[in-house]
Image (cartoon, rainbow, N blue to C red):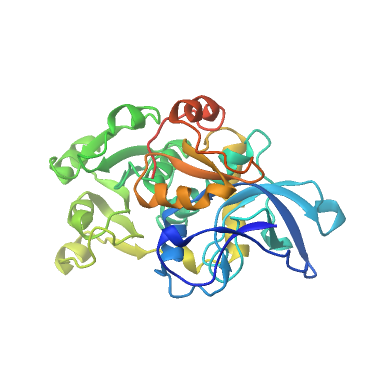
Length: 353
């Protein structure tokens, strides 16, 4: 089979598709024919050597959609989707290949109306957003949530989840991201800019002086104080990124007087069975169409995986997906064609990276 397999970490221009022999199928596992696979910033990070737990040689790729082609008889033909946590593409061969192997407890049937492409780009964004908002943040219907980095993949997924779960969403990001029309597609309650707005004052006004129940910090240090001061008594902040900075000053008097709770999240520590359980929780929201797949900015054939990785590393508004089995030498689909083909997968035009 063809696969994006690396023997060593290094520059993305060194990435190339190679012929790899299918691994033997262990007991209690299935072989999946990959139809589509999302490309995430974390995938580029693995290729570059930024994840110390990653082992070599390795077939890259965390997110996928496909069909079971070998294994237990009652699984054959099942349309599946999934994500790899800190396993696929890191310590076990991943999804950027024509075939992949999964244990039975990680096999998840995908929603009937989702195309493979739409299902393949939902993994990392919604696994992280659900873990932050619901598993740790304990978000409840009727609450207010403020989401930083709302123009990014996880931030946009978190905003979508807030609305799908019956809450009020405040989207926050930097001025460089146009948050107007995209987030109006998710019916957000307010849009704030972290660089120009008095965020805590605006949140208190929006919530009649109460504050937000949950804050999702997808940025790190630069927005930490703004988010903390925007929380209600007993509010929860979940941090899963330090991309904007790692060190903050924390007023412990403010912390305990407001009974704030601070959580750290690293989905790379989740195993495949844990990931499958999360899909079992947010998957029904896709099945009911309360959630829709992220918008796709560009599609590449598997043979053009290097170009797809470079596109993601360079920054892109929207998800990038690899299509297994497309003609060799095919180029990336145009933005216009992508937009047309994505409408059934992503009714909301939220910008994601």
